[in-house]
Image (cartoon, protein in one colour):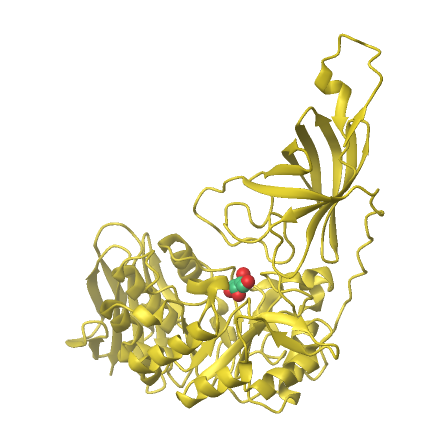
Length: 522
Ligand code: GLA
């Protein structure tokens, strides 16, 4: 539709006389999963205003201008104003979303505006993306909806009782790092089979965890259903259990998950009961869109609500908090009934991401870890192809020293022998699973070298000599730094070799981005 003004000034170019009237509803296609993303615009001459709406959320559109086929407008997200440009062709508008515009820019998934978690650090330069919006109505839009007031939820004073699970850090597999939205019933069955066949199960990896994108709609009674990718969760759980494995699932305290699927908001107890009836053994609960409905202070309350619901479900369900380490989670995660809590944003399969999370963002958190409640520096990327074996051995060693959950994130249906060897090194897994549950302390840091050490239940000491630099260097752990004295025997847990005894320090030449992992025994 075009709105033309009387051509009183003949000198004005024809295109500025007829500004396209953008009034109406413009739906972004393809729509994000289970939701609608649409621009509601109201034009006056060649200017327009309006809002971009997704679910219960809206962002204001201001300063809209049409000039011929070109469109510009400003999208207001809190204090941040981003200028968008676009081209109109009939009833279709192609909008360029600048790389700086929130979630989706440069990440290659999700809509170009988002709610919930900010994007994980991405080392690749962000690129602008394009949105196609089609006009599906020319009606003058209703006013921008006022967002519902955010609730503040307090945790119960007595806390949520410990569920007696995860005495050592949970081990298993999670679908997200490799499969993202491509996970389905068959993949889960095949991975379960592979976990048995490859020896992963026998090495201790027990949980097969379905991450985001399994969720369907709710039935008339509000019961959550799986979507078409998972025809029958109970049957799937039976299958996984028949392999001697356990099944995990994912949800959010908010109305939607990070990928835009149905969350558990206002259905907490009901969902916990449904999962228990299906035979679910593990829940990852991801904050995401909960920011829309709760104040940040509500995190302990919102997580306690599900913690209690899981306890009341009558099934033993490991409870994994995923809120990226916000609001000092170490101080309240266990009280909310959590067995583990993420400490950072999402890991990526590259050295910068893994080493930043492992070496820089865990130090000082050791006081919060112990049997039943663990810091979670995110899932393993071992075998996903973005790092070399030396770096993956560093990943495995560091996570084990940190008493981190070991959730493989690769395609176990086709795992290469070198990767399997890294994931199933029994001597390294034994460090992670040590009964004392003491997370390693960073005991030395000098240039590109770091030493982490943890005391094990039998009194021996696990020591990681790490080289973060790009040339080989000797890395030393002095007894004074380890707070030990006398003669100690060293065993190299990757070489599977005893290295003799020392009385004051141990050192090793460590390759770039590599580790020598030792167990010192008196
Ligand atoms: C967040 C989490 C990830 C993954 C995705 C799924 O980004 O931190 O681990 O669960 O959501 O959408």
